[in-house]
Image 1 (cartoon, rainbow over the protein chains, first blue to last red):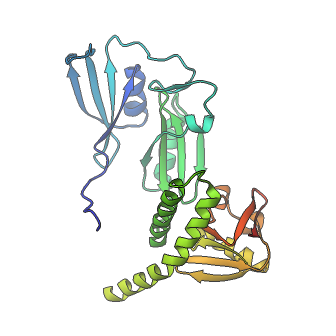
Image 2 (image 1 turned 60 degrees about the horizontal axis):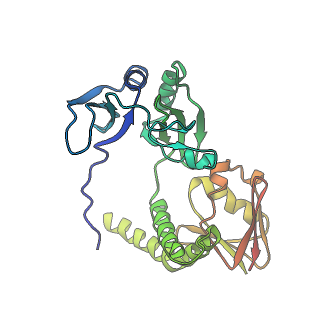
Image 3 (image 1 turned 135 degrees about the vertical axis):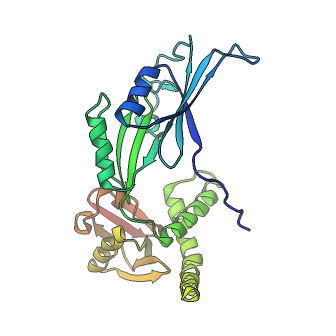
Length: 213
Length: 80
């Protein structure tokens, strides 16, 4: 049974900041994201919660990125790597530190390059521009150290890629349920699932297409 | 026998083409290319023209074999 899919994207994603001035400059003044909501709240509750400002920027599609600024709160770590929320020591590999990020969608390459221009003219220039498998992206870090990506699709996603994703996840769940999961074991399990299911999937797609005619 | 699978999307078609030119048989299972040979299969990356992100994610599955090389030069799948 398939559960009905009723959600409608990101309402907001929230991050702490110790630099509200830099954050507003980056999101509102450099990127042009409108401020769309804010809350000024006196600290309350069982913890010694500081007074805070919770403020929101529109990231398109009525989705929002939000920040908390807590009056009087000092930075909670002094690690050189990571962001203001999470710091990492030298024992943590760089690929892991750089794994968590927010990717904001744009329609096409013109729009991607427009955001590249805005960033390159600012204190937070683009650090990388990369063509991945089917998307092209630019990256920078905001004033809080959070990695921000802008990305555009180089072509629409095809139905067979949805099948492939389904088979990947089913194979992954099988492999991680056993000891010592590996990429080799995943590819072997996925080959079995391709043989079992890919032919029937294509036949079903063909019948659907005929029924639509 | 050596067999591996590659999803048929525009970025991947040159992988199947170069494998065929290298002597492998290229068939289909649903929307996947099924690339098979009795011996090893070697695909030259530069001949495919794939950029790195595409190249390193082009294999969907491996049956009856083991990936023994997948680097900037080539993909090599040996029989199990």
